Length: 198
Image (tube, helix red, strand yellow):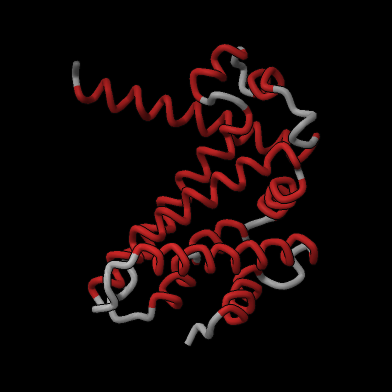
C-alpha cells in the first residue's frame, strides 16, 4: 500500500480520535462522567456508537489514552534531563510539560477534579499511576546505573512512586483551592516536603 495513503489514513484516524476525546471531555465537565453516555459523545461528533468503539473501548478509555500518552511524554522529558542533574530534581522537571498543560484554562482543573472525585475513575487513576511509575522507573534505573549508584530497580521504583505521591498531593490541593496557587508551586512544595529539590 502506498505510504502516503497509510499516512493520510493515520492522520485522519488521529483527527477523529482527537475530536471524540474533545467532545467527551467537554461533556464530562458539563454533565459529569457517569451521566455522559457513549451515544452522546458519538452524536456530538456526528458518529455512531459503533464508530466511537473503533477509536475507544469505552468512555474511560478517553482518559486512559491521554494518560498513556502523557506518561510517555513525562518519561521522555525525564530522559532528556542532564545526566549530572540529581534524580529527584530531574523528576520534578520531568513534570513541567504536565504542569503547563494542566495550567492552561479552566477545563483541565475541572477534568482533574472529576478524575479525583469520581469513584468510577479510581481504577483508571490507579492504572495511570502504575504506568507512569513503571515508565519513570525505567528511565531512573538507567540514570542511576550511569551515575554509579547501581541498577537497583527498587530505588528507581521508590523514587518514581514518591514523585507521583508528591504530584497527587499537589493536584489534590490545586483542585481543593480552585487553582488559587499555581500547580507548579504546589508541586514544588509537595516534592520539597518529601526531599529537598536542591
